[in-house]
Figure 1: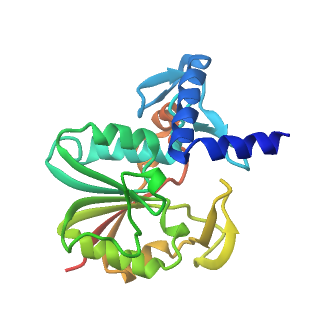
Figure 2: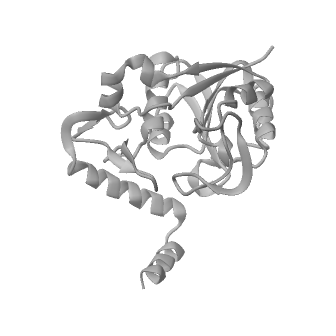
Length: 249
């Protein structure tokens, strides 16, 4: 019976509408966890704790109210505190946008902001990262968080990112690194800990893969930089690294 109800629910409501309803539920949920132990920098609310998340549960992961995860809060803090993202006039392309971050960025008057996803229900525009329908040297900033593991042709995606970013622009990349892998493992039909299909598990060679794709790479460990107390307060997690990529000359 439950499966029948789920099928009817999905047939009546679009994916975009279902996502909005989920986030209304998250917003209501947040009131039950109000407190002062932790603070979500994305929705600027404080709670007793961050919630577990994932098939294999990660503790202190999800914001009770906006449902952002550790990596989303790392990305937001980095952009807010370490870059010109919040005050300079910038043209931005954001792949697979996180719901709360997209809400924030779309309201920022200094940004010419576009979100893109292969699924048109999940972003402003349907964009295949392997074939980006924008001209060369177009974007000041490209955000690509936890996308490359899901892309069939990663070298093609990197080539396209390099093509459409401006010569002095930035491509901000995040991905899950599997610490037990010295080199990236590729195979179709795999799933990650969030039950999503992936084509590869990135290993410790990930920075070299980015360099092979034509980028100079700086690795930023924001959780480590802000220290243990702030990292715990803001729920930044461990090993949520930012790969700041600049086009090689």
